[in-house]
Image (cartoon, rainbow, N blue to C red):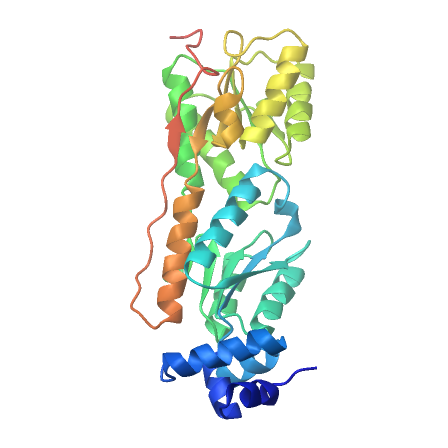
Length: 337
């Protein structure tokens, strides 16, 4: 195995100089750096990254903790793509840790990233609550940003969208279009996004003096299949709804499949709205009305805030990101217009 001393001998410099070059020390001349890198390439030296991280307290990496219950679907694909692309633009490596199925496992995944000496960590939680996340942030030696969760006591450490408000806006739009019998497919119970969107639905009904009815609401699990099953459940209850809101686009598309299977037309018989504005939404027939969640903008802000923290620059608390209702062909006038 080639060592740092072998590189030093090949380049004709000291071992300390090789160490400074590999640590990114700017006080080494370009000529010397070029000789060292040429020697590294010629002898095939691979530095011990763990040892280097311990010595410099810098890993040039950013950690991302996400629980695997969120991996499946286009939303996570967009989230991961944006995070990896923007991390690369900052000249750093992205390290993914799986939070698995519980708050304790999410905590362990964050500790794993801290043990790897990640320079900063992005947390996309499913199980840890706001209080637990604030405690982790306060005790961490590394900067940390939580995505998709409002932290009342750590507003500068969170980037989130106002799910309740844009759910309220989407349901209010349907009501203003003449719909009063509006069914709702929620996400996984206990999910902060799902609970907020359900609260927005209830808030819009209350605002327009429409009673909330339990049979009009079914829980899904964010997948196409769960959307189809939820629509099947609603139809089996023999309730008459002229509009359906699903808590993400996958479930909306699954619901549309079931509506089509029983001869109901979208939007002529049932107007349909989803959330997230995934790429498939505009290609679906009829094109899906949806609420655009600004994932790219949220991740861009997250990385900028995190890098500012890592580099010791000043930073401020962030405002929630608004969602944008995109009205397409799947929603139309209701019977009470």
